[in-house]
Image (cartoon, rainbow, N blue to C red; front, side, top):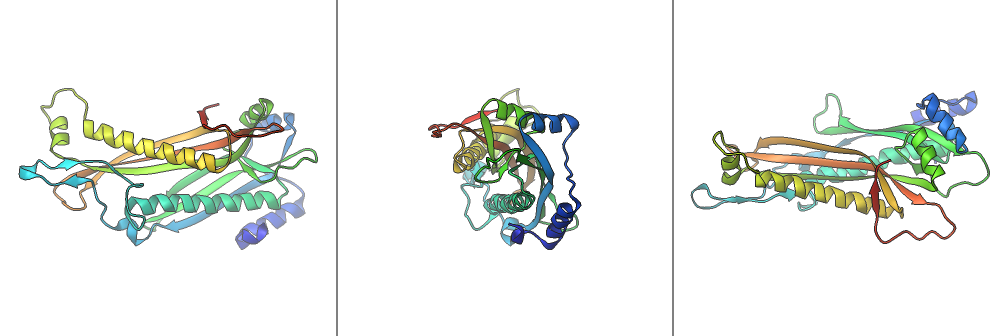
Amino acid sequence: MTQQLPPTAQARLNQARRGGTWTSSLSVGEFAGLRSRGFEPVGQVMGSTVHNLGWWYRAPTYCGYSTGLFGTGTSRTVTSGMQSAWGGFSTYIDTLYQARHVAMGRMAAECAALGGDGVVAVELTIAPFQGAAHHLEFQAVGTAVRAVGNVRPGRVFMSHLSGQEFAKLIESGWVPVDLVMGASVGVRHDDWRTGWSTGTFAPAQEVAGWTELVSVTRHEARAHFLADTARTGADGVVVSDIEFHVRERECSYNDEQRDHIVETTLIGTAIAEFRTAHHPPSSLTIMRL
């Protein structure tokens, strides 16, 4: 597993093994919770990568607007899942998944190199890379843990759960499987209906176009989230974070008009009930601890 790691990570792991001590980002309560359920920390682990979003991300993106007579054109929401696989927000979402896979894989490799069974209290951050436009840095940091005993899981598990939450999960008969994510970006042109609904003298009312933009984008992100969970073979998923961002831009095709863009991301931990005969149910469950 260490062959997959950058040289600096391998050197850090070799030093940790020679030193015979471990580090962690756990609190005293989290450490006690892990020990109470038969787990012990073996070291802090991380994985990171910087990805270029590429030229296609900066290319003009269709905003869903169809022209009409005398400015009465109509708009519809266009999401990253509806766009071409070769450009626009589709490229952005694909990069999110690819970079997450790389960062999480490197963290899992560090965990395995330390003899750990899984990683708890994982923090996944996605941020612009300083000084480089259209580049994103992905970083995953957590604490590798190992079960006290001879029973080993078949694969390294990942979990955002804290030490105490992990202990509660194990106590209730469930185990973490993997970190999962669902993301989507939607764009919608502000047509004349939107302008009329949001004008200075407009009455208090629903802005139907913006409602559609939010609803369609969230629905697609949730669908991707459940699909990623199903990939793990888990029974359900514990949601850790739901991010929602709205911004506007000049229209890619008409710089005198505006578009609104919604980005939503769901992150959580897929979990499975441990039992002798494990058969995942037909539908997934989303829950919060």
